[in-house]
Image 1 (cartoon, one colour):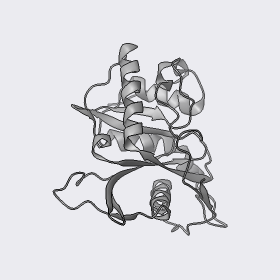
Image 2: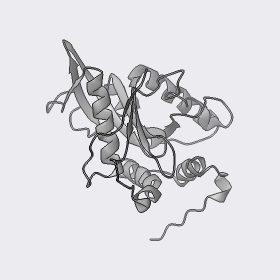
Image 3: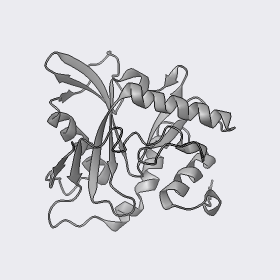
Image 4: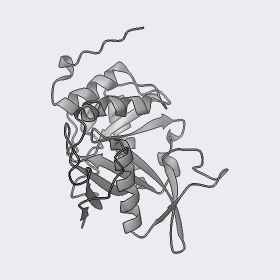
Length: 227
């Protein structure tokens, strides 16, 4: 059963990504976990999304991932998936809807389940003729129902009610606070840019994600690059 929080008393300076990260942290804390940074030199250290969590004698690693377009990504690595193969849990924190989100939804997902979904999504896309080079991020939908046609639905749906529903839903805006329209319009571009900072993104992948976000055919998406 998920919990709902009316307000987390965000700072006025908190952007949407900051707020989603705080919602993820609160979700973990409400499940009894204490959150800390991974000590230097230990597995998972040096990775911005990875945190050490403890509950009693349990010590685990979690990757807290935020998304403003309701997809989650991990980069392809030599032996599987960067970061995903090193953690025990993924805390995926998404908005409730595109355009003008009102809530943040935090899911706590077994990393083995997420890994299995990414593996079968990768296999299906490669079989369909897609190219996913090492170091490139692959995106999988949290909420679309898993299917085989189109191929990008393979592995989708981990955040659906029948799988790993939100542990916590929280209002994104304090009472009396109005979201910045410009910030919401930039949300998809910010998600893409965050991954570009870590990994290359192909034009085909960018078009696919934008088409899914706006509910249009990929042929309707035009991307212009100026040197």
